[in-house]
Length: 275
Image (cartoon, rainbow, N blue to C red; front, top):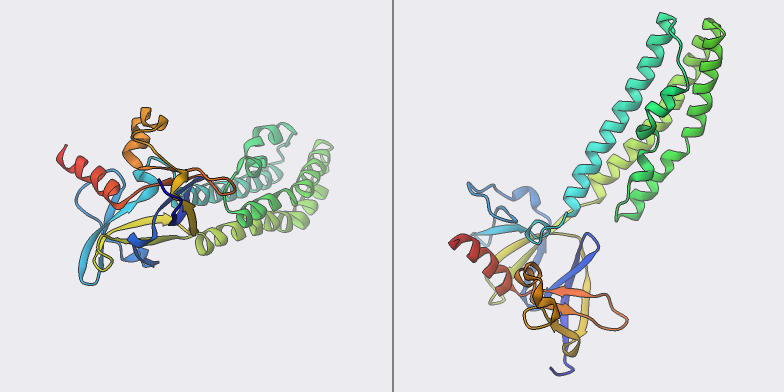
């Protein structure tokens, strides 16, 4: 191969960088709500969309290569946030019920709710702003644990009136702090983390496919000499990689980029259609 430079439109799926020749990119779009369902199921194919009066198929690229896309991560985190929020609300309601029923609470409840208390430590996401938001959930926890232990002491001494006073003073503010962090994380997910459509073309004019991808990373330039074919190179022993991409750009000072062509994308879906 020569030392010519190839302009690659790149994007991430999980921690991997993928790219294709920028000449095959017709345009970028964000009209994801316009995607229409199809009465079939096929690997990565999620529907169709109209562009220039042409109905074209839409592929979720993450699903196409067997990886989790940002929309999957977003959906999973939104579900977790609502579960955690409901968990704290249920816990506070249970404390209130025990106060009313004059039932003791114990420190065992802290260990029983360990997953709830440590949920934020288990979250690892690509979006640094979201990760920082989730990490702030640590801030109201010391106040909550201190409050909880004070309730345990008062209730163990049957000082029910004092316990109720403490509950009424602290319940709303402590729970509100936790809910505020969770609400901000949910709002960030819903408004800031979005996917885009990459419209692909064979002839530079007519749309052929649309890829649903994570936000475009950048247009990077790679030397032709840094390209390694998956079919004939060492990576060829891994069939699934060879089925998904043409090769890999490995160049000093730049991120490794899995490269695919429009033909490779079309071939994989045509093989499924004729299987």
